[in-house]
Image (cartoon, rainbow, N blue to C red; front, side):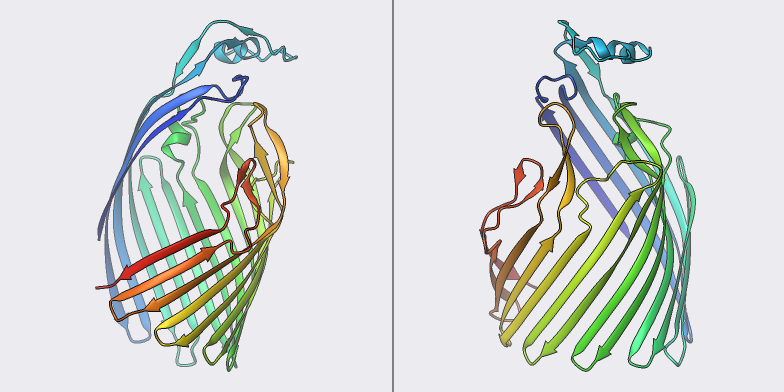
Length: 367
């Protein structure tokens, strides 16, 4: 398998008055990635073994500037590498200052991985996997284990997984906030899932515990990207599915609590509770009607629109989407959908209202 990806971005911001915290800034960035992968699969009775290797090349080039219309007196210490003054004055020198934020980075990563799966005659499933990545900035090994146990009309799944994510080129190389000493983000996750099926009724219940190490975050005081020690995410989800003739009803509720350990910092735009209700009807083989109602709990948010960082709580909201699909033949289908049917007013970010009632039509052609 071979894949190639390229992305170009031309960004400009006039800043936010009075331009001390968010001055005028702009940059162009070009990012490209090439990757190949080779996998060998072997079946030995009830055992399935997958072994593979891959290699990835990444390159990123950015050119830009941050332009201060005046030099803040409070920032002179930062610019000269001196301690900050004990009291902020808010004064500035009427001299324009432009700081380059250019960077050019390359990264090569190669990986080796293996996965072993076994299924017994009694429908027990055992799975284990391991992956080792090495390269310019990565020397990481992650593992994954899963056990699936049948119990009458139910099934219980236990899983443990590890993962990591390399810092972005922006986080590493940006001339003003980049930090070349950043470590990869790491995560460990435990999950228990219970599934049951009684004729037309299906029930799923899951709980999880996820812990992040060295999470990359922006530190306003140090004015650079840093690694946070530990961030813990705990929660669960319950869902119910019911089928009756040509009707299908599905409802789910999920809860996620996030804690930045040893800190009073809260992560923005992460609601603790969400709920979804879906109702689908297929009156004929060629016609279907889909409805989805989603409720999102209130959530913490931050904004800089006043020039200073302020905290807000966004209200909860409920959205209803509805869509029709008409299958003309095996190759052609027509869709028509109405999003936000109730024309609910809501915000997903401070000062940016969500879209009002929106009509979508589409033509789907399948070869």
